[in-house]
Amino acid sequence: MADLQRRLAQAGFAKLDDPAGEYGPATRQAVAEFQLSRGLRADGVCGAQTWSALVEAGYRLGDRLLYRKVPMLRGDDVAELQRRLASLGFDPGRIDGIFGDTTARALADFQRNAGLTVDGIFGRATLAELVRLNHRQEVAELVTTVKERERLRRAPRSLQGRRVALGENGGLGLVTSSVARALRGRGAEVVTLNHPDDSQLAVEANNAMVEVYLGLTLAPEEPRCEACYYAGYRSESEGGKRLAQLLQEALAQALGVPSQGVRGMALPVLRETRMPAVVCELGPADAVVGQAASVATAVTDALGSWAQSWE
Image 1 (cartoon, rainbow, N blue to C red):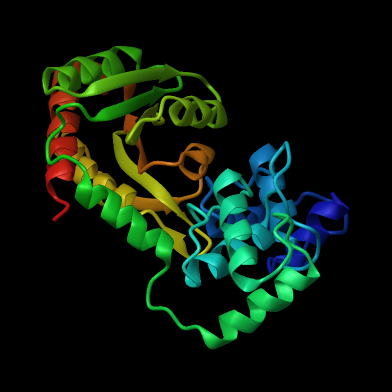
Image 2 (tube, one colour; image 1 turned 180 degrees about the horizontal axis):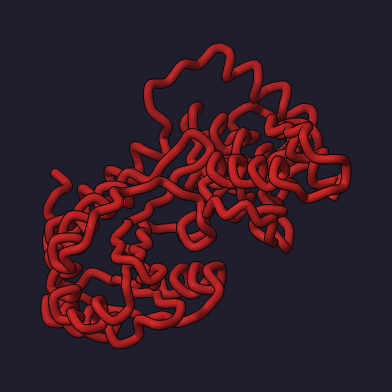
């Protein structure tokens, strides 16, 4: 518990009202504030996701060697490396704080262009050159943002032949099936995924090589409709955000429930997928299941509008 409080303080969320080692109201509030700042569900409970985020927040660029390994390195230092590479035109993929294959290739490309040893390891020499060049370079937009937008602009303007993943983690299987049928009726190739673990859903969506991911999750019993897209490390998915806005409007109207708006979050399934991704939280269960056909129509129309919107 004392370690938790220490890490919260290091991350800028110090609460001194609780005794050291005691998980009191002040510590719970600090955890909730930290969760909110990191795009996690702010319940004030330090579970596995929150603890991992706290550990990641403790790393600064240059604190450790960064390289491709299994499991992949994660942390704020990785995100800073990705941002600096992207600002110089080397595409590390999504700015997500995860050192994967795309980040490794971008790092190697940078080393090659900078005349450094091309070993894919981020150490002192690479850090010094990266900092030197970043000080000389000012960009209005990261290469990752530009490339995502260009991919979406080059894609077909309809759902015909588009590969879509539908993810569901329990309670909305009937609705997911209805959405899948409606999308197939518009010519889309649909992959349905069911797993309680968000990270596993992300793995399966990535392996399926889909172009867009839509997750449906059951909200608490109050009427609710909220759409979330990836945002983190001063970066966001433009494709995910636009889809979230379209889905939010269509689903709230179809269900006749209050719209909660859209939120940029770093939930595992949003952070770890490589394509534009949205998670829609819908409730209550009886209303959503009872209007499965309307939900399917709303989702299909929103995805169709999204495909057409990239000019």
